[in-house]
Amino acid sequence: MNYMELIRQRYSCRRFADRPVETEKIETIIEAGRLAPTATNAQPFRIWVIRTPEALAKARTVTRCHFDAPVLFVIGGKPDTAWVRQFDGRNFADVDATIVATQMMLAVEELGLGTTWVGWFDAPKLQELFPAMQGYDLVAMFPVGYPAADAVPAPKHTQRLSRDEIAEDL
Image 1 (tube, one colour):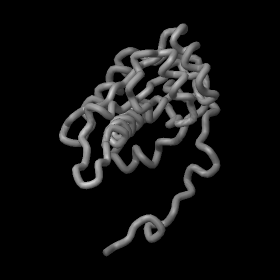
Image 2 (cartoon, helix red, strand yellow):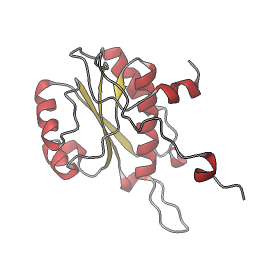
Image 3 (cartoon, helix red, strand yellow):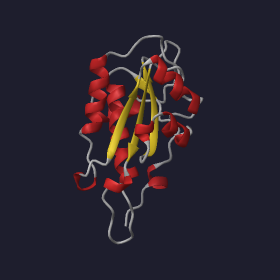
Image 4 (tube, rainbow, N blue to C red):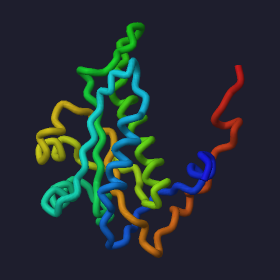
């Protein structure tokens, strides 16, 4: 499958089969994030893999959008180690972490798994439950697993703005 096919095929999966995700696939997803480009290659991000029953139970208390997936990834950027644009002081920790998360999301799809980008979670509570996350700007939580047999894209999935609505030639 080529890249354009991959991004067209991917959808936000919100129903997962009761099937574990193989360690090799989890490691491939992490590697996709590790290889992501970051500003000045500062790599100011961290990836947390939540997969033990105890850790999943804790993490599921901070969002209703876990969809009972067997694995949750949390991605965060560390502002104090990120590149800062000198002209306006813009810190790129969240941008870098988002690039990492996007590459991971596409790797999930390529591996035959499903996920959705979850932003609806209580980040302060998550950081309280998992102290290793403190000091990071948590940009995404991904429930990951094998799509359930009845998993389908949301009705609005294929609705996209036209090229003229999103791009401007100058």
